[in-house]
Length: 174
Image 1: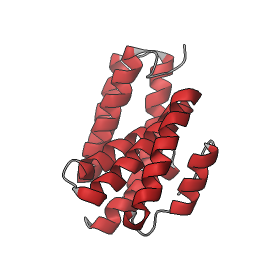
Image 2: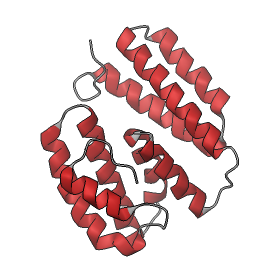
Image 3: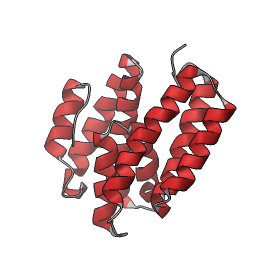
Image 4: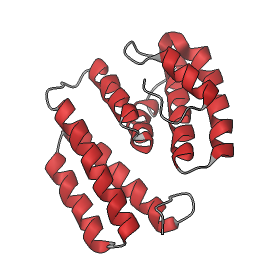
């Protein structure tokens, strides 16, 4: 069996729970707490496709935690972390992380964050070979990113993101 949160409810629940737990741990920089929760999921759901997914996430998250260990809590750090999540291919977690700011944002800032979220959802779809929904979301994200480009933080490679969304390239770095 293959891990696919779009076709399997348990996989979707695991992805959502692991992603939410990671974002919570990321805010507090508590990698050990996250590892405990992730290992509890592995114990509870010993299916190979699930354990492989969680172990893969643990590996990717460890890389992120190492990179952010010296960050402080300022707006630049928030978007640097966002970029790291994207560049590790952690599109669901990128979405969850950005959504924290989106909830309280207003106006053009909110629209810009929504554009980034749509782009991440397009790439999450693409990771699971859902080409048609990915194309539709990429087109919407592209329009919104072009509209809100002046509000996208310095450090995010907007040109690379726009190019990737146009081509729906498999793994764009921003």
